[in-house]
Picture (cartoon, rainbow, N blue to C red):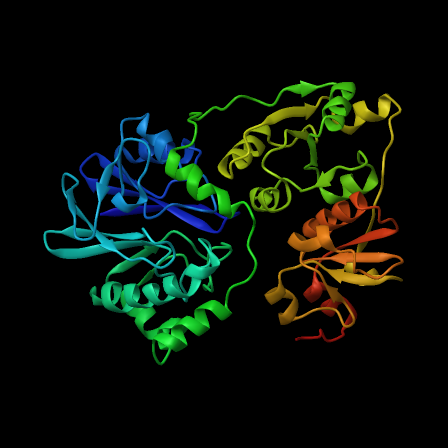
Length: 449
């Protein structure tokens, strides 16, 4: 058995291409863009015959329907009630994959319908794909369905791990979908794969004294998560639209067309590096630099019912931008400003600016740290206030006067500055670098809380 992980660093997730028989492959939990899976299968000499879904995903649009168009059969929980053709599985059901066998193991917790998939060679387990049921150093969160289900699902997860997954042999390789960097993880370490035995010995959650302690430790580890999580489960249940490897390219728009779309309610997203945005941008635009984490922040900050217009530099990857939008369910992509900011300037249209400074040059004004709560607590500039980026739209309680925004590098801070600028704040500065960079540059200790 050969297992090839395909990692989405931006979402913190892993999909897998598995050789299940000579020339036959299975993909587990694919994201929407089929290109990586089709390319990996071709390079490995495999035909993708099966595509398995461990649960209804909240953080990305599933790619199972994209792979169906290439001839694959979908294997998914019967309880998920998918509204498109698939082979429904319940606990204990097995499928002959042509060499290995796949057996469904009900592991509710992260979601009610959650299945783990055990690969068997004869009767011997050779791998288990755990989705969000068991992660290296943690497990996936149980609060994404409804507040009143958070604790019942956490208790179900305790039993799924202890009474189901931990019955597998210690040497069984564990291939989870969610991992470090995923907002579905709570918590997880930096490893992507593990074994049953390693988790039995080292997973902090599994060291809990009993079910109540497990539930308390799990729920206490939850941070905030993007609002788009609340809608993608249903998108994946119904079945998203199929685009294939090459979705339509962005349409080029003249400055007057961009202005008209903005006036009609379109969202203007500037994906250029932060120095370019700071040096001049269209007033009211939202800065989200195109990078692996782009999709998460787009989903967190932008309503899903808006047309999207983009500002890019000439050397930025349009295909990557489109695929990142599609993988979190943004499909109304109106186009991009043709010629970028140079075309806007040629028309003599208004620009706004935000100062960018190095982290060691913290000047006057209140420092606002926009990182997640756990990041801020682990070490921040003395006197810095905390306001998570995802909550900045309601930041009317920030102090008056100049504000200096920071994060770990500068990208989230610039996004925060653009949000505040939309709300009427001026005299904003963004710091390049993070708290550790400041400590090294100044020789001063960070504050912790």
